[in-house]
Length: 379
Ligand SMILES: Cc1ncc(COP(=O)(O)O)c(C=O)c1O
Image (cartoon, rainbow, N blue to C red):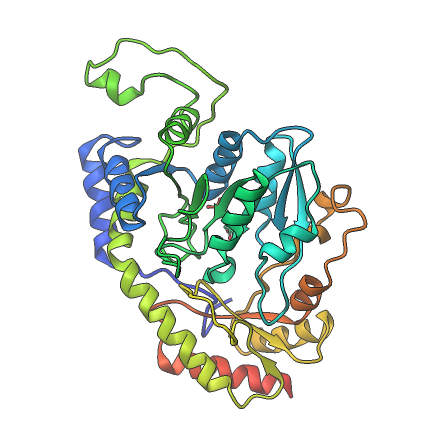
């Protein structure tokens, strides 16, 4: 389908293609100088001492769960309102995700109150998610984790360059922060991810495990700095390649402007929808800082069926929408883990939520078309 307004779009120009071609021409295609440079500038941009480039954010979350020491018998608190990868990473290491509710549809983030409500003595850690690019209260959750002796991991897939009031960037509050460069994210490398951390041992472990647990890398052997290698742990191939890192470097240059443009568009949506009685805007009161990854709206007095009818009408008129997210406890693959789990705030939110298109190159006309289409679809 040719959308008149797609849900998201990349902001590539010639720079990404030129950077990718330069890598191809160089003949060195994986885990080399571009990855090292991308890690350096990513760490610097997020005021973190260390960054490790990986193949995607799911890999970063998995490595973070290994570094946290989560394992069988452990529980890890995780919002149900997130992409399934957040909870899957907990399961990869044999631990159990305990799904927590959001505060309310008006404030669809999990905070200390929600984590506390789900706490048991088996809980070893917390996954904090900056849903939709809005800052969760990482400072308060960090303090709570410290008091309880829990490991904090941040899923910052939606939140690159999000500086919180506490003065730290999203991703910098706990043991590790994980970012995604999937094409629908605020910046993209196609597939790609990044882990930031303070502890050098966490970075070293992530670097080793992203490349099969090997003690030396192909590049070192190519440069005759090493003859062979040992394998010190059960690693993976979670490497980032040079082409993606080169694209990432170009995208990161554009990210501050792209995030600014997202903020302008989000503000304009709020103005355009202010008098629309059928639509409720989350994050309106006590608005958390945001990099506006997506723009969620809620239909008043709707259920999932009415919401889907509205979305269908919008799609028929060429405006793509989404739902962020079908909650994790509703998935078949979580039937056993989440047996009996009821999360009333999350369920109410998800049943009424529609994600409207948002991307930096969206025009004023496209945005007006989205709002008009939504208003018509509601009638
Ligand atoms: C909140 C969240 N966490 C994790 C991921 C996984 O990212 P990736 O696709 O880079 O593995 C995503 C991606 O969609 C996400 O939205």
